[in-house]
Image (cartoon, rainbow, N blue to C red; front, side):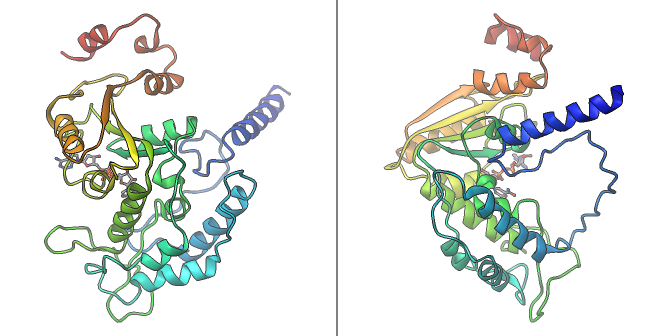
Length: 308
Ligand code: NAD
């Protein structure tokens, strides 16, 4: 009986979570439900069932959003979107996709967020998306196109009329700089940045063993340079740190300073915060008993404890 109660309780809890976060589409990244399914292998080539996933996500997104107040009104013909998507790379050399290859697709499904609602991320994939799930702010992966293609892989080969199931070539700045997915993500990242207005937020990783702001990242190459200082009233830089540290970089230091300098040189007003309270509180949801989550702590205490 207890087991039954537990199962019923879990089900209703899951329903509540779904209701509360229902407008968000990303699947929960971690679950303890055992649904008796074996993991699907994820090969290096084109994602199996790519067409079905693309069309399913495209229709699903529209059904789920049709009740939202800010519904853009127009419907997207998902078959048309699929044709435009395929045309961008099928039969083409997977290292030389044209920079404009996805223009028609982006014309059909533009990306536009409300003022203050854009969150860029770099080196903080999981934290930034968890934070976005818990707040009204949105990432590229919350947009329709970002949602449709996130986590998928696709390529073809020159002269072919189909997708390639062989491993898709890796990005290489010299020999393979224009991969099908690389050009797609650079195009949508550029569009998201050009459209950003009001406060634009970027969350970078101050605990990374590498630079928190890396000039080779998508954020540095396609998002930061495309922010419009006329439309973006403030670039809110969040330097997030793992709850256990280390604190490798903070505002005004090393690569974060380089980011601040580029923002200033581009005419952007910016602010920079080290692990601000809203992000820390979000991290504390999963770590309620952690010492960092106890009241009345200040940054110096935290720094002392996380830096040897
Ligand atoms: P990212 O997290 O994908 O890549 C940054 C990574 O570069 C860090 O994780 C770090 O490990 C690594 N790095 C940092 N410094 C380095 C160095 N010196 N040498 C080698 N590696 C180093 O972040 P990104 O590239 O900025 O892309 C994310 C941004 O671009 C987001 O804002 C998003 O809008 C967009 N985007 C999303 C996707 C997607 O698949 N959803 C893909 C591309 C771009």
